[in-house]
Image (cartoon, rainbow, N blue to C red; front, side, top):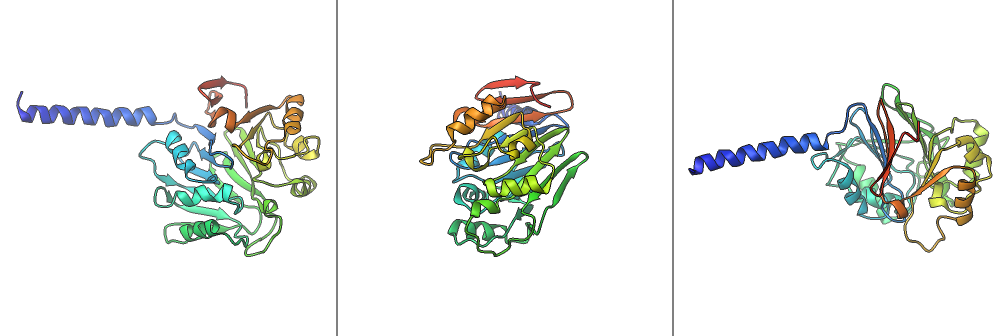
Length: 293
């Protein structure tokens, strides 16, 4: 066999590999996928919309977010349409800073609250470039993602830019995703004080999936907040820690109320998928079909 024939044969195999890879990784059309990434003791949520947008809410405590994104995005997809930072604590912002130079970022959304942290400053330096549109929240906003698909911030109610705040957890951006009939509530690390404000404001908190705020720390499940959300599933994003997260009585109360509890430290990445015909939850090699929506 001549070298020329070998060359064209190898070129054919390489082209075949590229096309097969493309079809292997390509998602079905009109699919929503929400992945709670296993990043240890921290939060990071990847949203892939039916309109081929990638949204990252928080990035966890370190560079483990990069492995999580690598597990869940095609290898050629190196862009983020939106990164939302809930608040500046390192277990939320550090991973976002680690994406610099590895993922192109179109838009960033955060409160701009005053906080003296080198990691937080790295995040602000990262988004301060001509290619990234930066939005500092001055109150609730809605990010239109397409027909019947949006991400809406519910809290803070007003501007926190450059403010010095003692209870940094309570500056967390609370956001709600509604898309293709599926609904998710992402409350960051808010505590009871802000939960009460949200309930009293009569904002629409109802969601099928709730991320446990502050990694399930000492929450009051009997309170009105969870009743207002009325979730079918609560996801606890947590890793090995010395804080007692998640609170055991909180988990028991959830289960007694018939609410399914999934933990990233037990299940790994937790993936919710919804398309026009079916829905599923996937984790640890298991796939639950048609239990939501």
